[in-house]
Amino acid sequence: MNETQEEMDWNGYSVRTDLAVEAHQMAGAAQGIPEIPGVETDVDQEEGMRVTKLKVKDQNGARRIGKMVGNYLTFEVPGLRQKDADLQEKVAKRFAEELRAFLNLPDNAKVLIVGLGNWNVTPDALGPLVVKKVFVTRHLYSHMPELLDDGFRPVAAVSPGVLGITGIETSEIVQGIVQNVKPDLVIAIDALASRALDRVNTTIQVADTGITPGAGVGNKRKGLNRETLGVPVVAIGVPTVVDAVTIAHDTIDLLIKRIEQEVPGNQCSQILGNFNEQEKRQLIFEILQPLGQNLMVTPKEIDQFVDDIATVVANGLNMALHSSITPEDAAMFLH
Image (cartoon, rainbow, N blue to C red; front, side, top):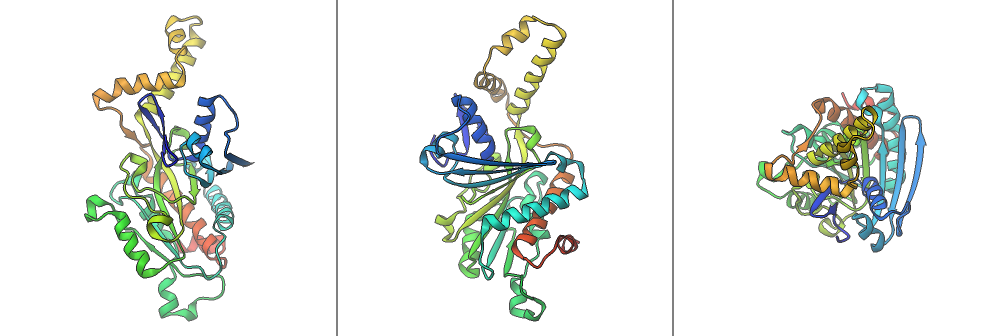
């Protein structure tokens, strides 16, 4: 495992997660320690929302959790699946506040928002959906500057598509745009993969380490980061998929608990219960892999989930990047 690895490798089976909080939890459990050396965490819990600030301080911490050195901000909001407009507004407002502090941009800094993903595939359409909803202003500074007061900044947005549609690597497209637009910051938005079903479509992660397009579904392309683009890159992602091994593993755990309740002392539950986390996952992987059943899975309500959380992310971005935009204004820009 090196410092850029985004998966926890267990005996040949890689537990796919793009979330730093999950990688931190799994590393702690696997190593039997509550605190990981080289990693700092700060958790703020309020009603219906959990905000975690995680900092990977050095290469030791990076190797231990499989994430790059940098800062990670994570919002976990289980209620986002309930289509609660008041909760969405509350999360967007808190997201804007935290993102504004995370970015710490000068008032005149120019921003390019890149919506990664395939707009034809719903679980991968988060980036393009957010781009549709953000308030872009770069053109107004050239053509209608009188419309802009203090509290706005030049913002451009693009959805470059995917290699299978354009025939061009996403990194090549973004590099060309960056060379011409010359932003001070690139914000890349993409769908991610989670290890836990309950985090799918309910979690937002922000990271200052850049992003690798397609990593969430195992199709890693050339990364978008300061090294490749020449400017800082902040990644915003939402997990929209989970792999079949995770679903099977969680189902078996629930089944074991149910059997133990219904039939105490059952030998089947005792045998399965003796496997540790790594052994259970490896066993499931070995069964599914030859059958071609180790799939990436998404909920059947994904259309609504993705649209709702894209609205939350876009709302938060609009308020974070333009201090003059209120929550009421942000909602208006989405229509």
